[in-house]
Length: 405
Ligand SMILES: Cc1ncc(COP(=O)(O)O)c(C=O)c1O
Image (cartoon, rainbow, N blue to C red):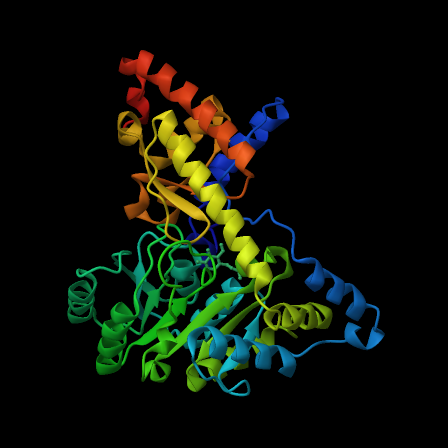
């Protein structure tokens, strides 16, 4: 039987191949240090967990909830945007709560895409940015991921040479996987272009609070007039270490938010009410817990860059996010990121995410997630040092012919 139309458009998950190797190494007793998936390991703050436990005892909270999010939660998100970015949002018309930002993003794609619509998407990027649209019948045109002086000329070229004219542009700063951050000036240029050319901006700000250098990452909505064309997605997953709770937000342009709300009203009844109430408490808290999360990732980042560097693998320090975007060490470059990642699991007991899983332009890199503690990161570095040393001794056999690209 032929594969279904939609499923044929979803390539097998690249990360699955590394996961399988990891599982089989573990079943043989190997102690794999898992820096692969961006799955935060820190516990959700106690005050949020306590609030959930308190609220869940009230049977009135066990009914279907509100698909758009309970009013108090939307008000808390509006207060966060006002406090953090100086952006004023109407909780009634400009905010919708989502079941994690990934769900919100995918359903926004579903809400706005007609078959064949062109969407400009960074490459490499977090997979749902492209596949949300591909699943919705859209067509992806890749954009550079770096928010540098080449971006606007690339955008102009992309718009000039796309038929039909692109529907939307996806931004993701701080970026997963590259950890690039954007400035407000960059956003000003992009918003001016998008307004002039009538292009929707979808900004994924999942790492708004995980930053280590310079000013905190801005929101696109800080740019005057951005609200006319923009929706931005934020997440509780990283900021409050709540990945399993599935709580995020889409905020911005009323017409776009209304389209997303309409689709969601057919699909879901919102997150479980106790989760929404606990998330409200988190957003309304004084921010001390966010500072703590940030400082844990910062220490891990410093340990990673230092210990891997001393092991012989130069990893540029990420200015934000919970990931390092590490160039594959020279002797292994030719084999590509998937084979290199497999080799690391098999020979160094360390799992990372192959860059190719984020798009073809990621294949010279692997993504290292800061999701193990400092001790384990040092242990990974020692193991990689041994691996690199033994590879150097067998220099001629470092990249088997069969694995060369
Ligand atoms: C850039 C980016 N957006 C969205 C998500 C998904 O977040 P959520 O858990 O809110 O769905 C992730 C998770 O890794 C991410 O890296």
